[in-house]
Image 1 (tube, rainbow, N blue to C red):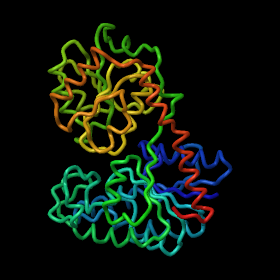
Image 2 (image 1 turned 45 degrees about the vertical axis):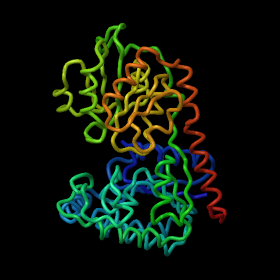
Image 3 (image 1 turned 135 degrees about the horizontal axis):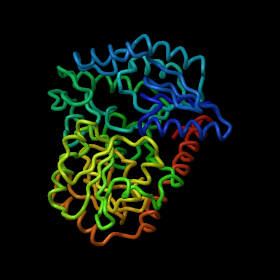
Image 4 (image 1 turned 120 degrees about the vertical axis):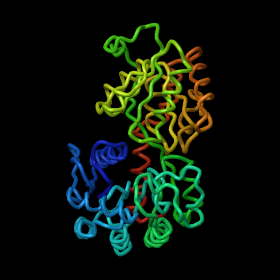
Length: 398
């Protein structure tokens, strides 16, 4: 079995981690795997090719900003990729994020239609369903054709609005292929797909998974390193806080309502760290999962005030390290927490504060949280993908 995956990056993101771990599992089970990625560095110990060089990427990004046509440039790079796909001749092609200024979706999907290979497309966000944005939020326009887009200022940010045109062309292109299976990490996104122009295709829900041998409760010296007293409760947030959807301002508001605790935020820029109010400890992104697990283990409550999300793995990581989760009821964020967390209405800061204080006073046991996380063991999730690959490679359709 020969699997080709296509993703924006091969390192440095959750989608990259998923694609790399899938590739390793395929090869560990006797198959052949290769990742075609758009930009940045290659991952160690997996076969990969880079689709686009930095100048092409920058030109795509610039033209997208000027025209609101993200995904319709990079023609030369995508033709080369198409030639490579034909030569590589995979049994299954697995698509991940196709946005990110590195692919021409017209050329790609015309090629996929000609090849008539089984295709798996994991939707890590809503971009495939809209004329512009990656997260729908409460906007209904994706159901009625987009146009007059209220989110052109958000990624992929643009100076004009061509969302209606983009959506029409996406619908035409994405429905060219025959043997396509859509995978979503959350039931929430699965429901959206079934209401979209992709509803003719089968949809499978395969939640994201984590490494339970890395993310687990541990005794460590994080508190001592950061001069946090044993009597202080730690309220933790982990996100790319450069993204305004991740609720940095909500943490600032939260810090004013919960005395006697320390808020620790991981994933901040240097500028954000310098501007934090007293009582909030800001840290940059932690790339080492083992180090990140230590921070989770030192905390008392994990808070995820996200305004746009699909199925955040940070919730799983926190549970696996034994701490409860308080999150906004955004996208599929609530789907993993079970009885070890609370989802409050998105943007309701008073409810967020009340839920955090409840868990600080009466937390569930670490073992109980760990049991909840065990349902999301990455090996079981990747095995579900392997079974799907095998079925499709053998000629079966969903």
